[in-house]
Amino acid sequence: MESRSLAREVALLVLGQLSEDHIQNYTSLSLDDLIGLSLNTLLSYWREQLDDCAAQIDLAQEELLNTELPESDKSYIPRTRQYLLNTLKKSEHIINVLSDTFELSRLLTLSDQEQIRNEAMKRVDLVINKYQIINDALDNVMEGWRLKRLPRIDQDILRLAYIDLYNLKTPIAVSCNEAVNLANRYSDQQGRKMINGILRRLQSTPSHNTI
Image 1 (spheres, helix red, strand yellow):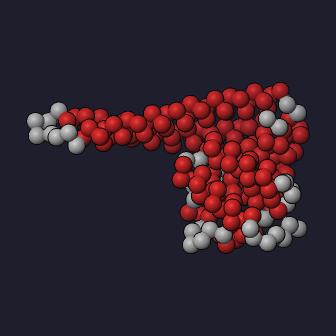
Image 2 (cartoon, one colour):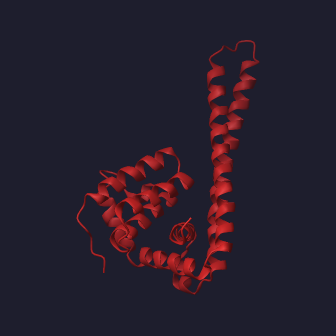
Image 3 (spheres, rainbow, N blue to C red):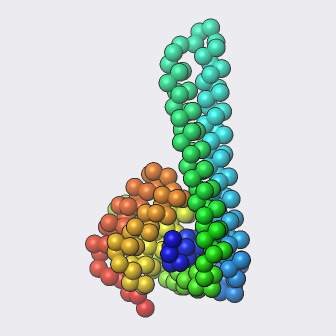
């Protein structure tokens, strides 16, 4: 994985943890600080995913209990099966994300950490300084939807893609591919579709102010 891809992922995870206090002094954060913030984002993400798995298992258990009642019918069986399939799918996704995270940590250890920090902070800095401009531009191509209605991680994936397209002059194909890769790691199926659609519409709009 190239250092820029690593930096982009670190920037995404850092953005997810930047509070008002951090925004005031984020430029002084070391790479260790950035990784700490990134891991906090990932821990929150895993917790949400595991909570969802637990909810699906509870539903499956409830349906299984219902099938044991004398008056039960076979209509419970397909629902139970679906709950269990959802849980297996979620669990597989969590395992994949965990694997990706271990790889991310390994690559950060082996690579040029200062370059990654500088690249990550450049992206974080651009997103913060152009926050409203980016939000307005994305809102304008969302066709009746609003950026703030998306999960935070999806919002930040789109903000970083905007920065790549309009400020860092990253080739369109590369920008979109990187955004899709992040969506595959950290978003769900609905989020990935939404991100793809917004990026397609964003590409067709005139270039925005990049000062």
